[in-house]
Length: 194
Image 1 (tube, rainbow, N blue to C red):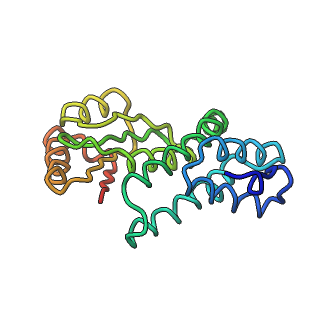
Image 2 (cartoon, rainbow, N blue to C red; image 1 turned 90 degrees about the vertical axis):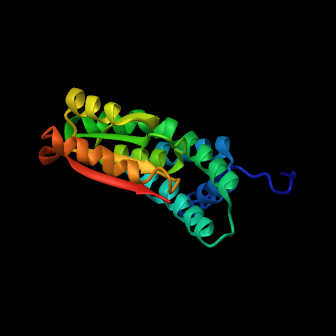
């Protein structure tokens, strides 16, 4: 960035700042996204509004450009990393406000054989922002991890993610095993991926 491009985010009005955060997120600029998030909160913005308008709004633009072949996985990873900068600031605030209005527990993980977690992480962040207590199982989860999480946490939703077409059928294995054990009737299942 040249000196000509350098400006103070505090000088922007709210609309301009949201657009700048989205631009910075698109460019993968972690510290700028963090700073913009802090400024909006200091101006009295609700954490859910910052999440929805600035961060998720920016990731929607990223998603469209990824779909259209303008961005590729490395760029999307950089954008997701920048979003994490803003989420570090928002997460404690969202968790605090969710204690009184929790929608329940949401278990999410990437299925066995798959190590891709961008989508899973984004869904987890958005669900956390919406008021769920998110239990993230991470990547490469065998069916046993999901069953144990359902027993331990009693979630209202279990989310499974897979990017690879070769690992997508494993979601069915998890659902079948939950049905065999009588767990399925009390839990909503959400599956996603590329």
